[in-house]
Image (cartoon, rainbow, N blue to C red):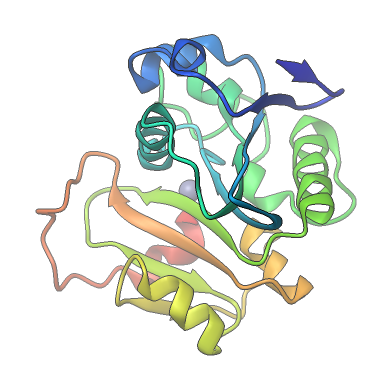
Length: 217
Ligand SMILES: [Zn+2]
């Protein structure tokens, strides 16, 4: 593992590095972590962020399972695990952010103050370097409900990206410093809210939680 001032890096992690379960892996992670997996076409990269909120584990679980399977993806993949530190505080995966800390998904804009601001700035720098052709940010809602996507840009590219995960797409004009505002860099970017942390695919459908979106993304 290599380190910068703010981030740790894992390149093509082995099953031994990952541990047998996502909780074992989380136990081994110390700080916000960048995971890179080399693709067959190394000239292209796609990115996925998750765990920006330490109590929203679905993306961590998905990445862990996928990495354990040791696939070689078509293009390079860049995974960004943001809120490792709040997620590790016992009981694990229960805190949205550090006690006294800021909401990381409100920090992706200047002036990048404090510890969370530094993490957000470092994550944005990774994205600028990798220049991904799309970016997902995977969250869970509080409570239960069906999956939906959130975007600030409702064009064909964003709709196509969201449709890989859900047929519900909500557009917002709010600018809160959320990672999905990376869409302004001309990179299709959507937030995927995969239901509540306790939900599985049998989660009740037909419930719209648009009113809570701006509070939970
Ligand atoms: Zn969230």
